[in-house]
View 1 (spheres, helix red, strand yellow):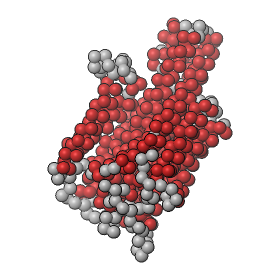
View 2: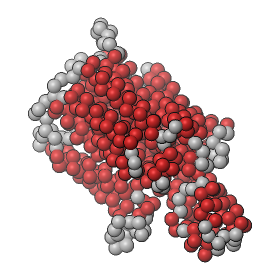
View 3: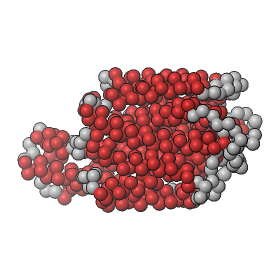
View 4: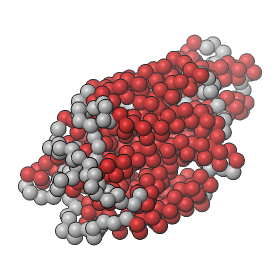
Length: 540
């Protein structure tokens, strides 16, 4: 049930902002780590000699770990005390950064991101809970808003600093920054205050297994749609069910387990037992609309953050710094908008801001689908990224504030866990779907081009191995073709097909994402009409 918003208490003595610096940097720590992974894509591919999709598995693994464990993490914080578990997991995050710096293989990278994700599973809900413990009134509203701008700032800094370091000295020093942030957050955690926890808090193990397994199946299913097959199982599938790919079956199983989680939680609540997460957070259509909107907006962001570096670094063979410059209009706009959007909350309700935000993201993605070329520095492309950043920045802060201001203080940890589950599952699904979608479109485009190009014979197609199409640069394609009996004319024809097929796949992929964004306008119309200012305090 939605709680009335409390008015800021102007008589309260302001609390020092030093503790908030630590929480702000904790959000930066997680977001910088995630944003640094796409920027480092090209360097890791070269360093480890693996396909881009293998590196993207690390991105998916991080999101998977957070989304699967964040609800359990919230209960651990409530049981043992937020401060204690916060310090432990920040130290774990530092260990994961060290593993990234020293990683000899891509498997180390994936393992490091699994540890980072498990750590973030507690950091995410702790941010909301610790803000609720340390701040009141207008300071509380400002602190909540700062988390959105911290996330956006991380995107800007990761793409710029990460791109510069990646071009000059390699991708590993980027995670030295992550290590430094973890050390700073750990030191500042001693300025925070919180209760000692409640040993009586019980963890719903069955509920945790339902939601954890469900999210794992969903993410694995989406991540392997291309590799295992969308319907029919491919040779890369670990197994098949009557010839069917396990990927869509995993997705179906994940949905069923998610439904089982909600059924089990509702039954447990009615029996008077403590659930893994309070379903009152989803008590009205307004709160559910906020969750849907959050999922879609983070999915779109993750898809774009994977697509652009993939195209610039892998397809065009350009440096990470070039990627950072190409993404700068988007990331800088998200940061500024996420920081300033709170000033509009007193003038416009969330419903208005949400609908306008999704109209902007839809228009921007559709525009990019028609104007994007092989040069990302053109004015029309920059304009599209700028407009998408406006909508994204407004939405990413708005939907979090809607959830926070709709729940009482004692549910702050649960709100944080729902936020973490939604955002990180959406990020994992967005990255996985973007990869599978683009490769599928590329395969279709290449197949159609081969049918219409008499110079590219079936024999040459078999030699190149077009049954396993992926994004490669023109130079890489030429190198592969030189190992066959292809003539110069055939090599030039194949490169021309590759250039057109990649660009067409990118354009159609952006148009599909625009359609997803347009669908989000409908849940945005169910957002509330109140103006969020602070986490409600039931004792006011």
